[in-house]
Length: 307
Image (tube, rainbow, N blue to C red; front, side):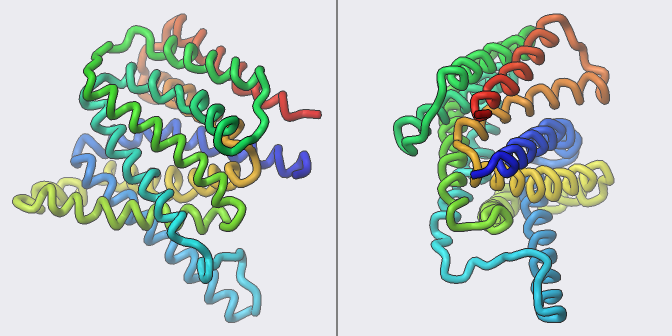
């Protein structure tokens, strides 16, 4: 892989993590008027509809001018591996994360999930047999400390059940990085993303209907009539799902799992800064130090690839 492709992959990871950072704020907006399953049903349906329209228009252009705008084809490819990927992320990931936060606290959840890059290093070394440098290991560990400092002062609520769900959340995220990395050898980023969120839609639309079967109007109408909810759905369904995951799947196809996953800590930085700037949330000295540690470590970790 040439240096230019590698830099593009890292920039794609940075862009994806930045988008993910704003998703927490938009999720809060939507959850003020809708249950989590309702939000996820709308989010993944929006992703599916937009991607299907995009793929359909692309195919039509291909027929009219003899060449489509971009390549997309699932024919003859092992889609089963992508279905497994879609089950891990977003399906099980969102379920486990929701219950993990429910039974612990966002501060605890954020710190535990920050362990993902550390676990991805183990996957690189033990399973994928890819080289990892000591600097990457140190940066991944320091980022956990940085996230802990950012979350310092938040509510500390711990339960065994909550910790179990968070461990499963980490396992799903690590599985996603590994499977996406392998899928990059056979599939294009949009192909991976399309199957992922089709699986999410197939799971969460029935889940939302079944959960609210006794009061569908009460569950769906407030959301449908809320402009804030639709703004959140557009951001989460199009930018945070379609765009961000396509970028991240592109990254996973071109760099190692450990390199890609270290950028997940940038999401914490962006979410904190978005809260401070847009929602006027407090920002103390420990948070400043934590943000600085994360940014320095993410930058330093990726210096290891420069020859």
